[in-house]
Image (cartoon, rainbow, N blue to C red; front, side, top):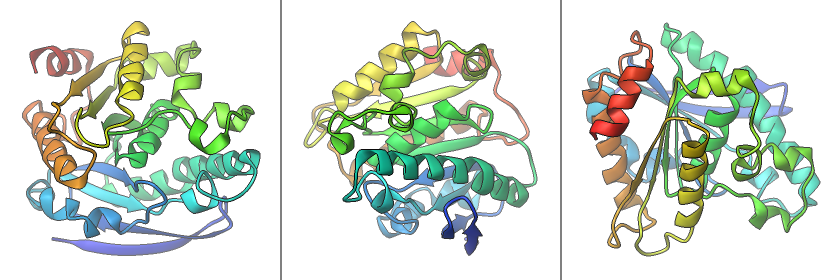
Length: 265
């Protein structure tokens, strides 16, 4: 498997940012680390080995950027400062890291945003805020409120980084038109430590009410909040996307294909 390490200076963050890249071709998938995690966690927890068949066959190319959780939501500072740093991270991903991915991939298809646990929070946020850059989202066992890090404080940066705050009020035609052409996969188990499944249900319901395509999959009481289950789930969903022809980077999503994915299972 082709594996590349890159580091470059982010002018938005004011520091270096590291990223690991796996594979040689296919639709690009950006993976966000879980709680206060690092860019190498997806590999270290065995997820790259798990999805190696998709990488080695040229179905996907995986990009794992570092997070700034330790400087934002998990930092010991005022919520306004946490949220400000989170917004800088959002801007760095959209304006520096996504263009880096496009330079690497050689095609213009939208990316897959993926994450587990708090990584799913990031993936949801980038999918919803940048629907022109991320066409597909795969969210596993995520939380979708940021109140735990803000203690109830809210300003513009907090609001714009909390999907369950801004999504119900989202009425901008540009965003809605883009999101109606995309696909969000929301998955959660009902087993041990799956304490956020209520937030997953709420996100799925809001998407449904607003007429935005989503595939909501609630797994059983044996499915827990842990890497062994996320390994099963990511293989399952990548397989479904592959069977639906949605991993082809030269074949853009269309409403009919998305609808079949959702309703034909």
